[in-house]
Image (tube, rainbow, N blue to C red; front, side):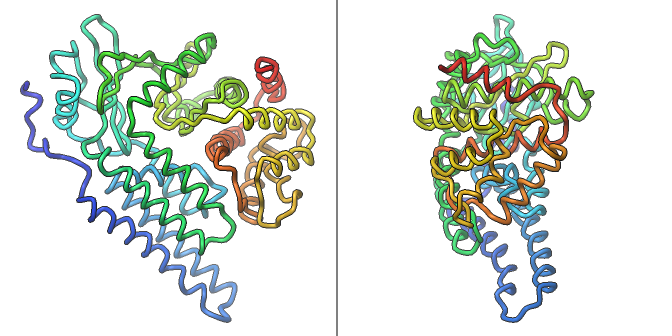
Length: 431
């Protein structure tokens, strides 16, 4: 063991025992829920209800954020997932939990080196150089930059100790909590969302599966010059360690904030087209669409995609149904889109097909639509809260998440390209 491997923090791990973490998760859930109890008081004025709810939203959002940052693991993943769905949560929760998309404090490098040594071999023997400062740190793992003896620059993704032990149980606890909350929360298909979330979180600790997804994406996008997928280094990817080519680029959200309109439009065109390919052609979806997983290469007008832990396979019958849905969007036929969503199994609280028309805006590609894209996105979110989806097909939970995030990004600009043309090209490719 080299000098780098000795550190007073070598025993660092996710905090708490399995039992104590469970108590904290259930405890914060109960604390958040208790603040809404006064809303059940008879004859409470609407003004008083709004005040109680506003205070409960703000305090509950802070509690969940604080607990997620402390525990990391599956509970932080839940917060990240929820923050990407403004159609499901009140604005204070979205605002506070969105902070979880940012970098979290990294684990000590001694811990990372120890995991690599245990699962692959001594760091100083495997790599020519290894950057002890993490390039990114997240809920379940962190990434370090390194070089191989042959000169290749690589990203070394290392899972935190005890993640594989703790996360599956925490995912189950999260599902149970959401199923209980479903009895209290009006008009959200939480049981289906909870099941999909449990599956996704559990999948993320399986690096053998992530490696397979990475190689599948690299094959699928081999002929796409505007998309870069890193190559796996299989001989060094074992256990809790995944090694792949290093991809340069800037976090997409930060890049969009600094870019001019033309560059913003081009970056989002590439992003949207890449997901159209996944949904309409490949049937394999990158289901973790937060901006840190997409790296914009401004000088090459190219988008790098990373982190394939959360992926979802779309069944063939669903992929074909989605093609019909997108075709209705190209005709600007909102009623047909509503009918198609109903046939796929979507149900709103109102119970009628017309209630699905608001969600049809996700598939409406009419460049002449009334109002700005940002206004239309806000209307979609409001409609989702007023007439929420009571039933979502489980195979489309992650597709919906991707579309909501993309629609939100597009809402802030007026693209110079035609969505219908992108859809038509991908549908023609898949026939």
